[in-house]
View (cartoon, rainbow over the protein chains, first blue to last red):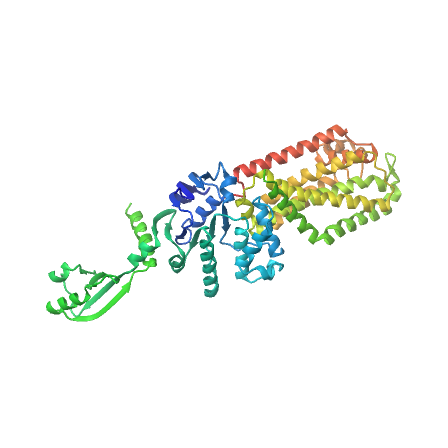
Length: 313
Length: 253
């Protein structure tokens, strides 16, 4: 199936010469949840802004549902709902009016049943006649989602949907997203929270300094996440790994620790054997520790790697 | 053409107007009444007539113009500046709407509001002075053209403005003096000759003159020239707006 969004060699250079995007290539499949991870200023929002028509691109092309975002902007934008990062609502308006306005703006005829459904799904129906300024921060964010969903988009962009919201509300937002995914909406969300990407996304893309470093299924990232590292601190540091241990894949860390990476999901982790070998080699343990590699580590590694490559260049 | 979107913006903006209908109506009525007290009764009683027209009646077209220009500019400027200020502009930018549709919605609403205010002033004025409008259709046409042109001008200011101060700068520093010097309260022929020549460079002179003609069949410059001036201004504003949206100036980074 053709991707619902296809980004090719997309570049963006601001007037001051800042290169926000350096040739992004990305295909997004219909119905998936894609999380874009990246530090501040990585280009996540710029990427979204270009796809949604808020910023102009410098080069490359983007299609949404096969429609070019520049040549065929009406058809492309028709399919997209956007919830931006910054809170922006018409505080003096009533909830229902502002949602109806959004629908009209996208050229859709009145559909009270759909509006009611959206507001009910977001538990806003009771507040529909309230002025937006009377709502809490979380409710205001829901209003923004309701506006984005008012015209029945097939793709929803959520730019940092849970930035600055409390834990409870974050969980609520996740429930909302899951419901949306069930209804077949493709969701692209940007986030700082690794936990959010892990919980929500089918695929994770990592952006740093305007480059897409990796796009991978969250599952396969989770698999590397399933790997654990055993660090063995010895009573007396050794210069070389004893051959029996080296055979099993044990390496020596710069600090003189023995390091063994294993898969927790495997039938045999091999830890018992290693401990036995240690004893045979006459080595005494000072300490043992294990740690799990998280998406965060992968992310940090990737960004660090990119920096190292840059420094080398 | 996404007419639903045009209607949505228009209705949304009009709803904003009607929410503050009291301020919208009361302020022009009060200020118009004040002008009549000052210029009509106090000063006007000593002026008697200008070119054969009661002074109180003579200033009505100018007063309407003053208010309509100010209202068109400020309403349209605020209409587009406010979403920019609170950030909701993202929605218009990401919607499947073209330049012309956005402009039609915002400018249409602003022009409608200033038309309404113009008519309210006319009604208020008719309480103070005896008015006979000789070319009512021409009067309406002048009103529509003026309101639309200056609402377009206001729209440009709203996009340009980076803060509320700048938003008020042009109406205060440009529109008010141009209207006061543009013969709103006097005939250009009452000025010394040198000033008459200078006055001809003031675009508002043509507006007021043409508008006054629709009331009294008398004007400082020919009606055709007035129409040409408004049309020229309208086209200029449209050209600037087209350029703004093409380049994304101040709207799209």
